[in-house]
Amino acid sequence: MTEMSRNSTQEGGQPGRIGIGLELDATHLKILEVLRENGRISVAALAERVGISRANAYTRFEALRADGAIKRFTAEIDHVRAGLGITALIFVTVRQQMWRQFRAQLAQMPEVEYCAITTGQHDAMIQVRVTDVAAVHAMVTDRLANIPAVKATETVFILDEVLRRPYVLPSDRGPGRSSRRPPADPAARSTGSAGSARAAGPAGSAGSTGADVPLGMMRFVGAAEGRAQLQQDD
Image: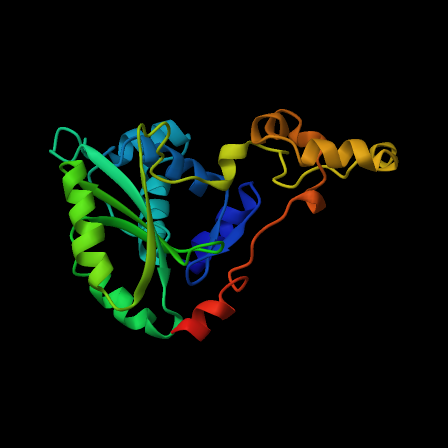
């Protein structure tokens, strides 16, 4: 694997370290792009799509699996057809000394598709898929509310899932595109009041003039803000 990784770096692309040592180059990313569309594609078809030999495609594919860059293969289902037509996000405030209990209880709830610890007003976000609205209500009031680790919840129903990708890749942005904003125009800084007005405007207008808003004018709520009181209340 080490020798293959060294050779793949020379073939082009900007390498990135992943897993235990495989160097991820442009060809590896192209393989992952193709697999995102069809995880059951044959090695021969994969090689043709990527533009490499079948032996090279097989070696790289197996290296991605062995290194852990590809964790597993699974099926993507239509949740509505499977009978789970209601999706909701439940934001949870957790008592800070009881995280272990919260995690243990959450693992016993089969409705939970995803959970993440977050910054901001709440501590965690849970995504659930259920049969109807009543099932969400029962989960929040009968189950989550009875977990001592849960201090408060806020539920948001998802009306439409506009976009869902299996995964994203650095190559999705295309060559030469940076994820960082360009530096603010010094001339614009001289008109600070106008810039502040744009940043403080409605979300829609701010989005339409996002390139004019310096990154420093955005405020991110830290995880620790406002939580000292929660610890005192426990």
